[in-house]
Image (tube, rainbow, N blue to C red; front, side):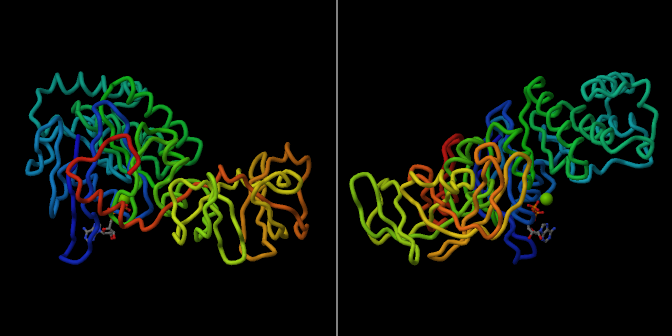
Length: 376
Ligand SMILES: Nc1ncnc2c1ncn2[C@@H]1O[C@H](COP(=O)(O)OP(=O)(O)O)[C@@H](O)[C@H]1O
Ligand SMILES: [Mg+2]
């Protein structure tokens, strides 16, 4: 499927989606990842035909479906909050779309059974139960079965696991991913949860304020964020605004207030303003920082345990704060708050992000078709 220059303006004033273009290869798992209100559901609803684009086109299987109603599109939607019919049984819910399409009764019965099999709910036990007689996780499966029973080319899923507790959510993530692989159909999945996106998807589109700021696989998006927003939204990052003060062989000397920072030069020019993103796990503390080309001193002002590692905040003597994730195994013990320590990172561990993000977005808006695997 593909969308080109998709735009949605509500009430002549709210621009929810701004010229979004992307393509999803058949059989791949694509995720739109972004914060609440960024336009994810609106894009999904335009793909499914539930919302009319203000501008732009939607293609499915090479065919322009922009003007077709939902039931003529070969798409199916799992809604946020599921939207199951409480007065119908499990079988009644799953067969609903087929009844609307006037499929013969015996065929419906057979396909409902097959759909229940797909989501591992035995028909005998569950078929005649009402929606309020099954658990949250089982409702999730029913919603999935209801969407799959019409055998869509493209399945659209809008934050489907939002209401589940963490353990169940993880389980549904694994099972849904497995189902997608087995069926080989295209999934367009929407979530605000970066971990969910990183673990499930082949390709992720990171969306901010109605624009896709980067397309790429999990690795690219985490290791090479294209914009400041992406760097801050995916995982944690120390984002430092810096100015290129001097170029040396292979390296650049940058300044941020009183900090002097060495970073890879990568075609920079003197005077350029940019951002450096350094992941907390790359920031070393204590004696581990001694060999780093960027080495500063500071005071630990906060510490939070996160499983086997500890997240510490360091107030630098020269100004500014850094977050470091230190493995307890590496340092042997926790470092008490108030300790004065060395802190540093290797230049190669900083990601350079060149503003403005507007350049990236407008380039994206203008391009007729976006290459699928590259960061933009
Ligand atoms: N029917 C509507 N009328 C007016 N504004 C809407 C409507 N639907 C969504 N919006 C607005 O569009 C923006 C994007 O919404 P949405 O696509 O639901 O975001 P997300 O799914 O990423 O949370 C928000 O500012 C939201 O308030
Ligand atoms: Mg939404």
